[in-house]
Length: 142
Image (cartoon, rainbow, N blue to C red; front, side):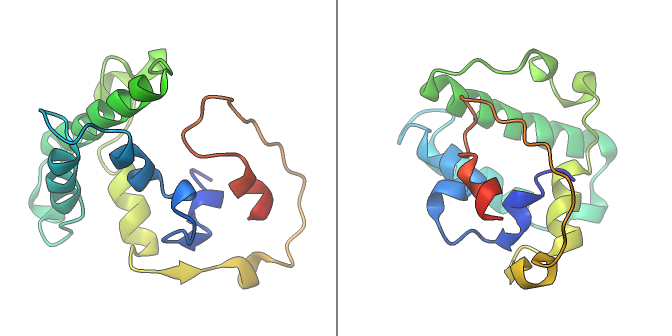
């Protein structure tokens, strides 16, 4: 699953696990890709009433906007942008519906699935990057 542990409890109770909040927090207060610009982007990104009126190209451009904020946050943390997404969403094979699909299919206004998945046992392989924006402790807790 994509971002599975990060989506077990949403929004996360601890801000250290809030991906969008972490990215926003690493952005400057002023300038082109500032926290205010991110707020404007995120309001548009989560405007699901307009989602189905957008073309595939518009959704890919929106994903590219997110990647630009993500790249700036990684840079602020001293982490290089992964090579596979430097050229943008389309070149990386990231479809326009990836992020939107996660929010729309699961809802973005709150849930806690820990009780429902608590009894599931399955082998797990956790690949953790030392430079990840979200600490791996989230996956242990999930």
